Amino acid sequence: MDLAYIPSPSESVWHLGPIPIRAYALCLIAGIVAACWIAEARMRSRGAPKWAVLDLAVWAVPFGIVGARLYHVFSSPDAYFGPDGDPWKALAVWEGGLGIPGAVALGAVGVWLGCRQLKLPFALTADAIVPGIPVGQAIGRLGNWFNQELYGKPLDTWWAVSIDFDHRVAGYAQYGTFHPTFLYELLWNVGVALAVLLADRKAKFGAGRAVALYVALYGIGRFWIEGLRIDPAEDFAGLRLNQWMSVIVVVLAVAYLIFARGTRQVFVLDGGERVTVDWDSAEATTAGYVNGALPKGTEPGEIESAAQEAEDEPEPDRPEDDVIPDEPTAEEPSAGAGKPRDDS
Image 1: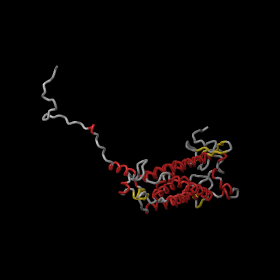
Image 2 (image 1 turned 120 degrees about the vertical axis):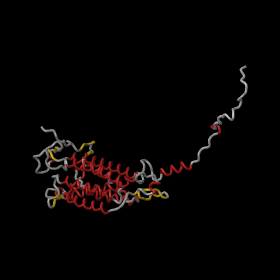
Image 3 (image 1 turned 180 degrees about the vertical axis):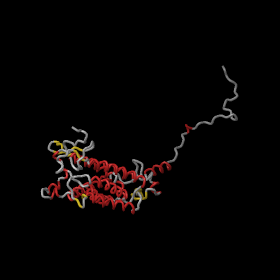
Image 4 (image 1 turned 60 degrees about the horizontal axis):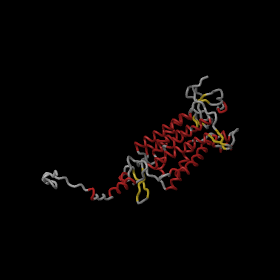
């Protein structure tokens, strides 16, 4: 028997007494936590209030999950509204089926609402948090592995994934191993995150241009990965709906990158209020920013304040006990010099 393939987990649900613990949900939660952690670190480096990302997540996460489910149902309606479909299954998020385009679109609406509540600039916030999104997506894709879903065409090689008979798509029951398209997307998303981080470090993106780069790169990867998948989906003119969506968002994102202008914005304190300035402005430098970011663990103006306090602090007076007497010189002999030695 050929063992040169990726095995699928035998279980995706464990029970803690009567409570089901689903691997898919755990992967989603882990992805959200990772995305929030990255976003928080980047927001703080730009002078945002501590834990602002958690307040944004209260809006973004529910909106994102609803958007992801709506997009999945829209792109694969037969499973829910077809002849053998079950409309109530559209609510069964725990069984899998979340569309990333919908998650990003409605999640962005949630971030916008959170920014309005916290009085944070939306473009600054979006550019700061966006590298965490593909990392969260990558971790979340592991849930598809546990659920044995979103795999591709039959494949006979060492990196193919084994799919149990009960989870095989209709018409492919005779095949045992398939393209692990969820793994392809996981690796692609990690690469997208690194590319956006490195490009942003060099170009200091602003005005939502980091978001546009993420959308363009993700759309390119999603187009070719989607072409390998065999799960039921709406199609048109030989392309699946998600491929058409990828083409549209890539074109729009590239156009935005070409024509949009804007540089990174950071927060500085002005009379106790946080205001935004360009990353390379004199105000940013004075507030302690180095190459467009605050040193870890500092607040805007904290370094400047500490330096100013050090300058204003008077030097302590030297105690009289510490005064060192002058050394005698040849011109000024010390007391007792020239007296006869008393050996008695």
